[in-house]
Length: 483
Ligand code: GLN
Image 1 (cartoon, protein in one colour):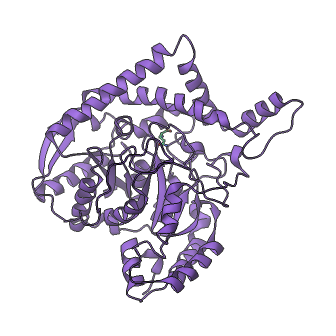
Image 2 (cartoon, protein in one colour):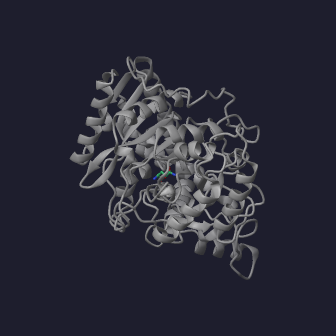
Image 3 (cartoon, protein in one colour):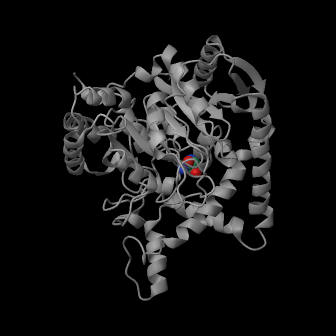
């Protein structure tokens, strides 16, 4: 087997089960790949190669036929997810030295399933951004063109897969942070239904919007990771008790009769023609497989961006209040406790995070609360109703993910609004709490484009079935960048 680092989770898992591959050999191949391409891509903030090799040796020694498909499989984790004993920075200088005393539920579940962590991945500071340029540490590069951003905020999570340094990763998605980078890096990614995956141990950004989800090459691989991380967790009060179906069993390859809504508002003004063309072609492939296309409308879509940029910063401003230099991470020296807090927050939060804290505090302050925060919550309800209404007519929605392909590093840095516009097609989904899958569906100007499939609450299985059926007929998910 040459180029072990290119194996998908499913392929690696089959080879491990058949005794044709060891976890040590696979881990070594990925670490060698990392040495070769990580200097260009810079997906990682913390590498745990030694620990990974030690875990791989144990996995090989303990291997039993009844082990699940992730046993002995290396993957990597976005740095907003707590890992016991391994530094977790959230891409922020304020957590430069923070080592969590416990692991997030998702990490515990992956470990229990035998998966191995290669390290922690770069992201925009506290997941605020769409390009990974807001990291306090370095910019991650798009493996398809290192002059360009990988998207964000889970840019490291998408780039690590696209660069074949890990067959899968975990990201988080508050307004598009799994889906937009997946699209821009030509990989698959899933934002589960709000409540499907435990947020315990995820450093909160917008608590009513955040979800952890997997990135990998194929929908079939996403199904394997979701299977392990999904399910109720008593330590997360918003975690749902809804039973977890068998996601792999749902991959029948059959989309005949599936009603696919094409929401007209998602083909936004300013969308690149190559992105629109690839998206529409992908939708035509689903139709050719027997899906039934229906044009639909979600009229409140245009309010999603302003609504999100009230609610997410409001929640962020409250969530980030805990970072004061006293309880977590480093502390700046000052004359008094208050001065130390001021200096720590003033110096160690980056510009975008400070902007969000100010926006959020303003929107929540007395006198403005009703005009901004309360109004935004009311509009959120209308956006949610849009989805309830279309899902009475159709089973899934098919739409673009990002209106553009990956942009150049630095290009949108001085224009926060242009950056916020990256997420017009993904934000409404988080406001409604529904799940969405992205699969690679072509290229525009040599750069990847992703198709977004949006589903009813807790119907991830339907999305994965449609995404997998699409991947059985297309080969976009098999294209690899030359690095
Ligand atoms: N880009 C959006 C923001 O900056 C979404 C980020 C995310 O999903 N974490 O808030």
